[in-house]
Image (cartoon, rainbow, N blue to C red; front, side):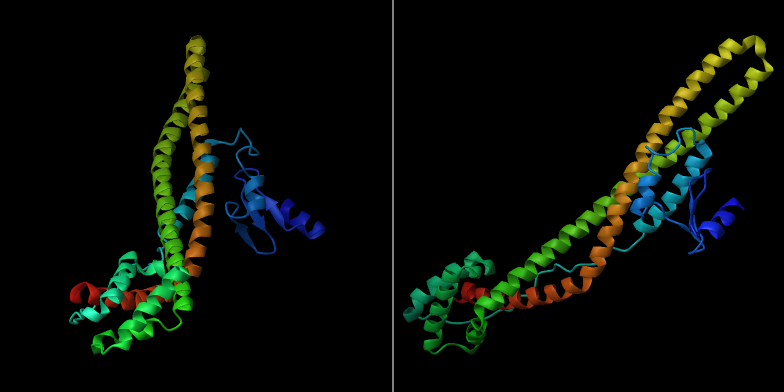
Length: 291
């Protein structure tokens, strides 16, 4: 009731449990997640926590953290579609008069769509296209004219969309890597938890034997010191796991939020890249097959 009396008198809404360090908010009427609130996380960091905190309390805290981590690991990663566009087949017969333009366009096609980011290459592409369009051309090459419309703006939009897809791909890889780290730490925590429980049981048994067998107190104290040393080492490993899991979990929460926000944007970017790449590949295929 001391918590309640203090809140009524001072309106201080946060209360921390000395046993397990959980934070209760009287205004929210709920426990707060200290692992995702920076101010609370720094307050309850291993450097500030009591070194005498019992194993059961530490394990309770880690169990709660692992439940939250399991929920994050099960979060679906937004799917990004990076499949190349389909290529259409075009046919056209060679004309000797257009050899120069054909050679110039073929070189640009070989360099790839990204080459059009260069303004000089854009001018060459438009000039060679004009030569072809000045002669009677098969209907399959009508896209050559429309492809050159707003060439600079369309190429700039293509490169920006391609960059967004690369960012989305890197983000997806980052999420996968962080989930892998969390799965590794969760597996390691299960082993450490088992070892801590076994060590705690051993310590308790040794303490009971000391009380019952005073004649063997010296030997039992030596065994107890060894067991307590082992327990301290496992607690240090537990604190290291706690720190790493907390850090990676915080980064994963941020990455998931960013990936969710980018899902719609990457879909639109992919459609633009696919449409533009399809037009480009169609023209390139035509030249490859006809010449």
